Image 1 (spheres, rainbow, N blue to C red):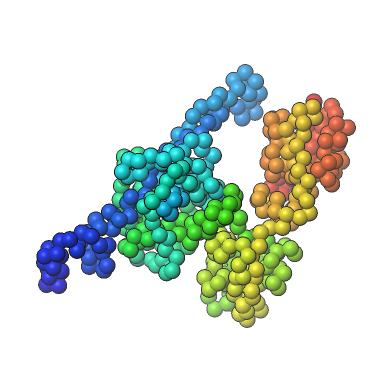
Image 2: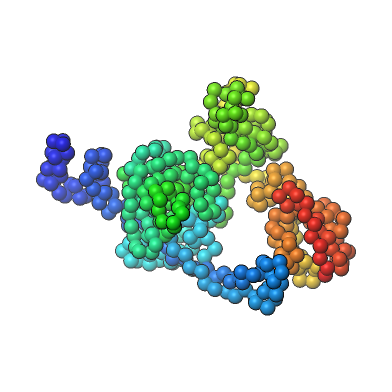
Length: 458
């Protein structure tokens, strides 16, 4: 008690010192977060985004009334607005936010804490990671936060969440890091690896900052687990290490996030699997299948190997593995710790994107064809990775069913296996086969590992 009282008296005797610097110790943190907030808050912005969407009747997909509503009650355009937060990362106005806040937006307005407003455009966005990088128009000498990359985040660290919950204005909440390596638990579109925190996060905080006691950005707040719609103390943030890779790619001119391709499937090693493999304790990913063109296969990994770590970071689930690969980036030489026949080995794998060969041969059917607007492509590893197809998928895939294709039940990702019994091998085979089959058609497509037959008449 005497030590705390002495510290309070010292600070009272030197008020300027207490007000002008960031707290440097846990004891100082217990007194106030104000200096830290004053330094960090100006770099956190409010984001207002709008886009035009087609409003559809809830009966449009009904099997009985759907055709009536599609023909006589067509979709009408309406403006959809979203509210969220963002973090400025550079003097020239580079901002990070969530994809679900600004993705596909046609108009983005960024408002700073001092009420200045800027128009913004998306440089790079990725729905899977739920991250987007924006550029403020005409911005210079902007306040910004530094990404923390020199030290790993630890459970128990004090953190602050800054954002605009429920549109009430900029708000700061405090808490600790509750957990790391959370995967498959966050809501929304994001998948992968998250920092968990009990700092209250609410709707509108999405895209806001999670900072440490030094004012460095350790994560971008993205989602919560809740039954009521409000904070229950379980929030998730995307780590700053992944944000750094997004910024680097955006500055390099990429418009779509490029992540390394693993080219393998696997399962987490639980206790039962660990016992059967003779491991001392559970952990790692057991390789169930591996594509021959995968860089992991080329480095010597095989089915039955257990991947234990990437660059020294343990991996215990596929999303965690993809996260560490994404942080390393394409072209990096990653050190992979592998358990093979009870022996630990370290292999070097040069991370690479999925090969876009052989040529995907994209084809879009014209207005005079049987299924106007249908878009197809030949499957290669890049196409398979982009569309989430099985590892060894082959053939012709639907990339866009078009308006008529959608009506007969075609979906993006369907693999064409037959047109009235004819199996197309090239994308150029599809249009002639459809014309020859008129007027009665049977399309056999592979969907989720099953063959689905679609019949219609032109």
